[in-house]
Image 1: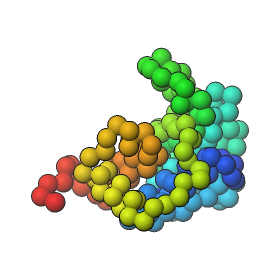
Image 2 (image 1 turned 60 degrees about the vertical axis):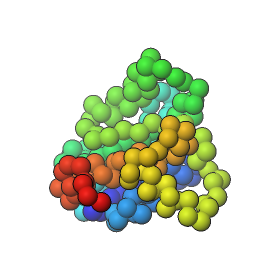
Image 3 (image 1 turned 120 degrees about the vertical axis):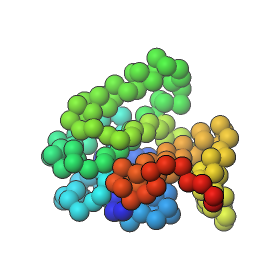
Image 4 (image 1 turned 180 degrees about the vertical axis):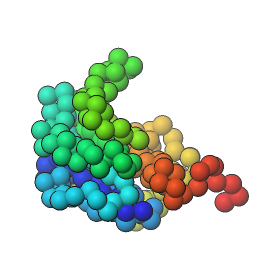
Length: 183
């Protein structure tokens, strides 16, 4: 499966989140192209697209909205996932704040129909050092659904990306359509 992971801007926390998503999907066997939205010439040739932006005035950055608008016709024909980095997310809790946060991408959902959306605080995204073997252990815990609540929060991007990868395999018909038994 060939996946485009793209993000608004060229540096910062949003690019770090996009990089983490791309690394997880690559590790799970996808062929991933990671580009800032300004570097994307076409979404043709990709099986799926993952697009993201930092929250900007309770919505997406203008560059991200332009990317969706320009590619709208093609994005409606392939699986699309959205991610939004909301720095204040760590302090917002409960169903009411979730409804407010969902409004951040309502204008995007008005143009395209994502198969999944991820909302991340960006906390703990930059400056993480890889510990040998930890990523493999984490992947196994994701695959066997053994994550504890605290692990889910500290690895929210990776967890979402792994679940999204599985969903994209199902939606594109390139993976199992039900639970895998006998592993």
